[in-house]
Length: 569
Image (tube, rainbow, N blue to C red; front, side, top):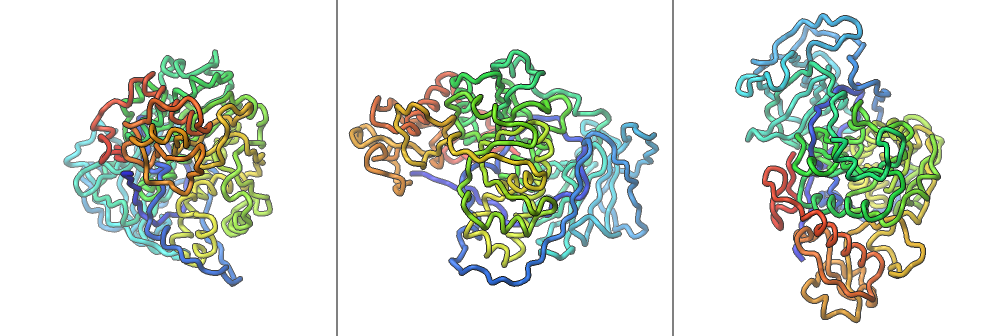
């Protein structure tokens, strides 16, 4: 079995303390939530230590502000300092006098880089300001030197940070001149770390409101909808992804499963993290948001990040009364979601019970990280999340916030990591806890159900089950004992722990295999397979046949096996 895992940086930075701003209206990709297990060195290093003694625990204090409309100018004046650091290379980003009238669109965008604080405070900073839009900049002249980032310690304000003020953006590039990420005002204060390494930036302004420019072609969206009027409240099936081959075949399979599952009054949309729209965006309804620098350190942050930016888009944002079903790209719909969407209302959501559903550590950790609603019971759910649009709009920035906070604590506080990592796997699953904690913060009650999905590794479900779950969370597939000979050409050596000797005698597929996008076991036996294996292979095969496969495009994805996980930033 040819396998590969993604190795990503460890540190996390504290969440924003200044709200939302305009974002780049481009379509794009998502790499980090690659659902492949993260092989962070520290993740596999956790020792089996005893429960931490009950020493005094000090909460990390991170300011939090409810974001206003991201496309409106900040109303708070920016304080100037007499103790500015040398501005360095700043040829194209000149000082611009901003004489905006009250409520008028800002005439410039400001970038500040703080040299000795990770919280965007203090007087030792560089200030850059421009009124140029991106297409007006000179890439050879309008470059800002970005200083090396530093690792930080919990509770210590020392470090480096940057902050955008205004409707523009700064695009970040590495030493080789390759694009890494984009910073916008809604990112708030961003601590600067050694990884990902960035060396240069281009600051650009936006003279018009990008939120009023639609990304999703209504005609393309209609091809993936059963609702008659997309402007009216309906059920929205959404997931976050990147442009890689890994996500490409899952996107096609996911789209086919939606079309094959007879959804009632619903639509299907991909939420992409990428610098620009990818090639699939022309054929599959896609909202694209620029990559946050932090997603190169922790990929799953793409999910709350792109959802928050989706809501910030006035044109493409969901209706407040939509029933939104947040899934992963490897969630294949099998049944109409109406049974579950009919159960949600404002402040009352629905979710699948998570793997940590019975762990008291979830509530214990909430007491340490909470900002509001500290006495609320945490509803321990994972995807699928079923929630009203108005609620998800409030959840998204807090989801991102608590994800950052948990990651920062597990990285910088050894005692915190010892208390929770070995019990909850928070190094990888921080964004799951981020969602749960955002709901607790907002007093949104989430009903826990166990019949919305079945994982590939859950107990086998009979193929003729009269009441199967709504979807499969796919990952692996097996051939049964009586068809061992047919399984031999596809036999995997990975996953022996899940073999049960009957329906699961030989593993023939795993999304962890770097040939998963190009080799689907077929034909499959007509009997003997369990429900999960049969429909996983059926949907992937039929989806590729229906859509013609993932197109080759070296700009957005590389060929497997070596390029299986590669994605455009």
